[in-house]
Amino acid sequence: MIRPARLEDAEAMAALAAALNSEDGEPLGHVTPATVERDFLSDDPAGFAIVAERDGRIVGYATAHPGYAPTMALRGSYMGDLYVLPAMRRQGLARTLLRAVAAATRQRGGAMVWWTAKPGNAAAEAFYGAMGGVPEPLVGWDLRGAAFDAAAAP
Image 1 (cartoon, one colour):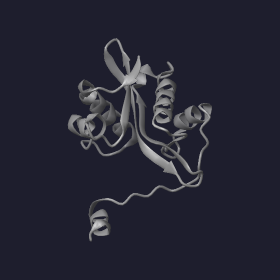
Image 2: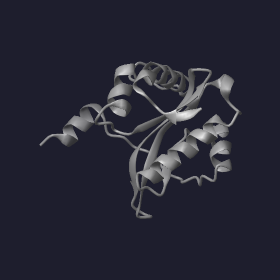
Image 3: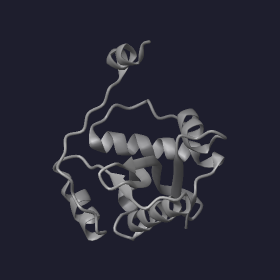
């Protein structure tokens, strides 16, 4: 079953985020049940989350937040995470999660979903291409830590 995430899903979502970050070689420990609750399940969320549930267990999830594509003048969503447990892959769950993100985005007045994948992730490239995604050559940047503090200072 694919459904919007609920408060009681925070712990399972944090565990799935840790699995995703581990697979991608990203730092662990930043995503916790408390941050999931704050960012996706609170009264003032940063975005929305959808989960895949099988036999009462959360086996996948997707998160998204409002986005805007200025070159196309389109409102939409940026999908931050799309993850399904390895044992549950190739059963259509990721496809259904992505479609649910698109439907939720349309309900919010959006007309596009944008996401990124790590370079060289052949499985992601094949999946996203099969879904109709179009790759965009770009280099991503982020501003965080001391550099962010310096840039945001008055």
